[in-house]
Image 1 (tube, rainbow, N blue to C red):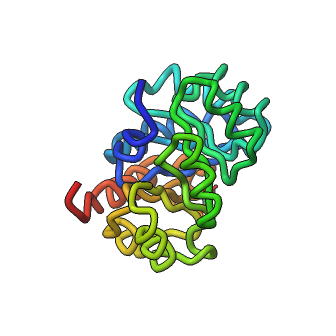
Image 2: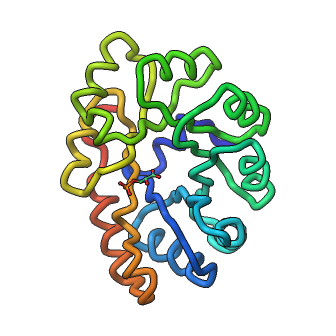
Amino acid sequence: MADATSVLHVSPVIPVVTIDDPQHAVPVARALADGGIRIIELTLRTESALTSLKLIANEVPDILVGAGTVVTPGQADAAVAAGAQFLVSPGVTPALLRHMLTLNIPVLPGVATVGEVMAVLESGLDAMKFFPAGPAGGPKYLAAIGAPIPQVQFCPTGGISLASAPDYLKLPNVSCVGGSWLTPRDAVESNDWGRITELAREAAGIGQLREP
Ligand code: 3PG
């Protein structure tokens, strides 16, 4: 089983994917994999999200698929039952964090303040999602957190684009970034898998911008 730190090192960008029609799930995942992206955070924001999660987990073995937008313990359980290989939450509560830690898969809790980072660190985790990255302060804010708390690695997500990703990826406390720009809704709905592969290829090409 991967740990949360290794989840952050699968690809330079974790696509945050929202799928309405489960028929799109496998083609979207394959299109991303064809472009060199090996990981998906599938959001639990649609009614059929768990069906899509299950399809990707079963049919696209070269993609590590996790559940995003996990806000309740029940959602975490349902995601694990559907085959989620890791869990991502936009923020944390003590009850949600405690529960996710019992599930034996990697967990990336969302944090946006220094106090939240410290609380998650106390639970034994040192890999976190920084959300919403842009509105919460962007690369400057993350660089500032890295001074007193250098031991935490982040996946900043929220308001990041291909153009702004390098500003995050060059920071010593950023292992990857997340974003929804790789799977635009119009491309998914028009079955434009070639465009998604192209966006994935560009994102995969950002590469590692600092020494590991
Ligand atoms: C998330 O859930 O992580 C965000 O909705 C993704 O943010 P973005 O759409 O600004 O990339």
